[in-house]
Image 1: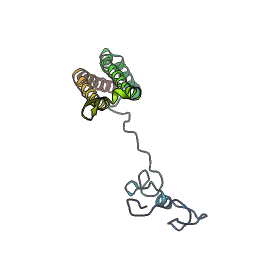
Image 2: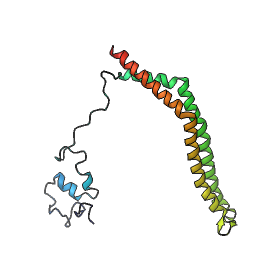
Image 3: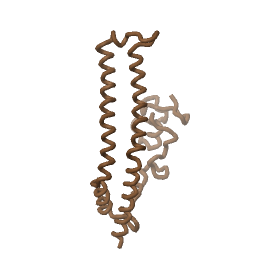
Image 4: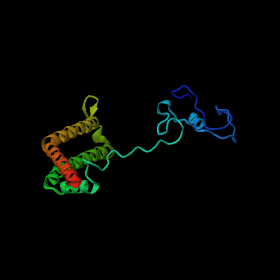
Length: 185
């Protein structure tokens, strides 16, 4: 078998070893990479420093404390205050009031389909129209209800949660900026 870069894959040892190395010879990182069946030329060098085979330096954190950025404690306090707010609790409540019943209905409907298919094969085999039987209609119904739930979730989010969540986001950002400016003074 050959990889995408045209080089044959070896099994890592034995007489079919394409590198020509014997058991007691030292292996380099290039030899190991060459015989690795999962090696891909597109990913070569990933996580290595300048092709040396040594691990690359760690990437620094994206956010650092400094001017215009709050200290970790100040940001944590802002987020905790927002989480305790009535507006946040209302958004979470709206989410739960939709998702919990939808998940329960979905699981009951799926379980009913499986139970009916295993315990009542005569009912599921009953023809409805031509070659279409009850099991086929119920299976198609599973797909249709999945799409119905996805549509209903998106609609519910757009009409009842998105604006309130966006307002909370803007408020949180304003409070975070205020905490940064208050901490820098």
